[in-house]
Image (cartoon, rainbow, N blue to C red; front, side, top):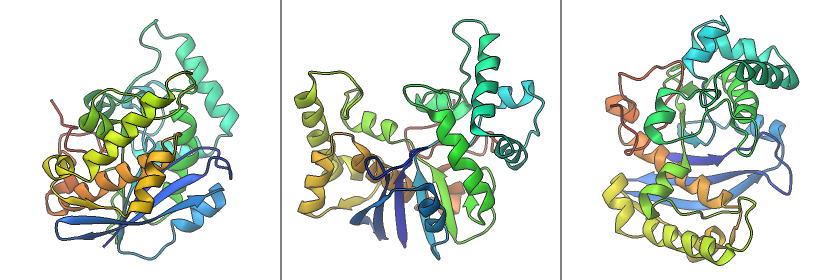
Length: 276
């Protein structure tokens, strides 16, 4: 079965495209075939029409915190509030979040979903540095307009399944809390390169078997691409593919998504993300 890992960006370009790991899942093995670059959101829309069956792990928040949705008196279900957000301009959405945060007490301005807390992820209300709110605004409505089976927010029974990934969680489990990509700080290029090398070695060694239950097969040329990409986008899309394949292996038991989660917020699929 085809497995995709997608490192999403809200403003793709030829310089920083949406990056896709194209993989195939066999019994006990995930094989990385190639890395694709999608330079526009229109091209990303077209990629969602690729015939199935397939599963894709996408690196952006599918939903918003339930507390935010309730406070704003939006429709409580994922399809309802995402359609409401899609009716706004991007500037209107950003301004609304800024106004909401302005009246919140210090330290509680950016709410997190249940899955963000358990996975150690940032708030999907974040507009700067890691602009997750912008990624939600551009990504979630596109999923809403598709027929894809979006787990757990909107299962449709379609043979094309989309789950939320978070490569930072996978990387932490493999090498701990080490920076492996450019973040704006200078003077750490060698340390980040060493971290990417360590992640790749872990991915192709016993660690992936121990953590995710299968072997990752990558050719030498693609291994070099993962290590050489200082932005970390290529490595991130492969980590999302690993999380998607782990979810696929649990398709008979909820795709690794706990029954206790709030389906309207979404859930990050990874063995390291568990409810309390």
